[in-house]
Length: 230
Image (tube, rainbow, N blue to C red; front, side):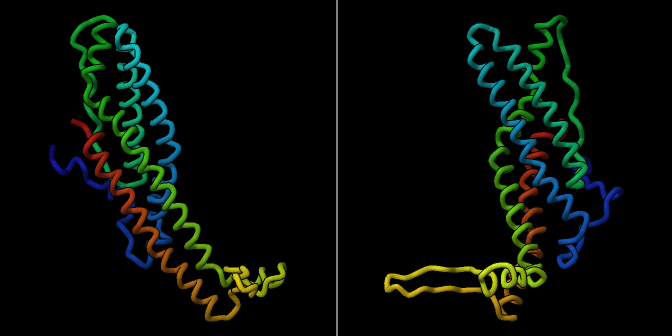
């Protein structure tokens, strides 16, 4: 297959933004949307694939498992199509659809055996199984970096709340009593401390699009290998 089949759909979306503009770009929010929406999709896909595979394998000795395994490959194709749509829409990568299943014999048994011999369905099911842990990791890291980064960056705008509405002098980062009975309290109060917190947030905000894109890169590679048309 030629590399043109994996071209980015740059005709529909703007080009990739620069480092400084990335945090507020549409491309970065699409990448973030892919990482966040990937977890519920992965939970559903993993649950269906594992359930059908375990049931089909357990019933295989009675031949009743073969239709269940055929249903697994149908589900694998369906989830693969949904994932290609997500990748095309959010990651700006156009993956070609695979060919339809060729049924060589008539009747229900012919349809079942054709599905069992369908590599596209099996690869689609394997994608859901293999990428489930990665979906959890991507969702967790993307959520933490995005929320913490913006919360720290905007800290100067709301830091006054702690001194006015609590008994703290500022945001309290530590409060403990050591073994000698000395009480230690550390609040963020000075302009330099507040600016330092905001700078840390700025760094996280700037790094978040790069991190999310790197995490989604694994999905791009896996989709090229397992979901692209053959």
